[in-house]
Image (cartoon, rainbow, N blue to C red; front, side):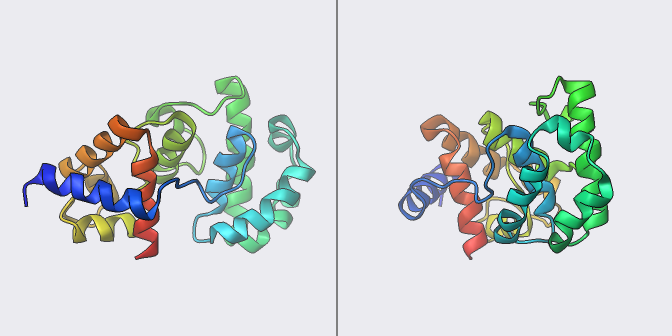
Length: 193
């Protein structure tokens, strides 16, 4: 099947299954999404959504979380696993948002990767969900598996899959037609398979 025809067929199938996909992590402010995504590493979104209300109640602002006692944050996020690293990186990232970015989550891959605990997967999620970046592919094991299965990518390295031609073309088509909805559909379909 020609690549363009394949991309069109995939888009149509995804629109039927996932007409309005949304981020499963619950948040009110941009920095809260950054925190929730950091907690989601090796943890379910459901667990993160159970933990974050208490965390954000204890520290209701970016400033409060940036000044938080790391050991108290550890207690609050303990059930998400890897809590010592996650708590430390969350507090340090919040401090950096205040000191280096005027309290805003940066809108470029380069700047996001400077934040403690933020890798390409987290950066792409933030770029896609907060800024609507069309090429921001959250390339996890699910995305890699489905992209290879559909012939959109070859390989198992996230950065290579994320930047592969057919997958990028599909994401660009999604953006051209309906913002990031199509791209989010790919992510959700990959998780469901």
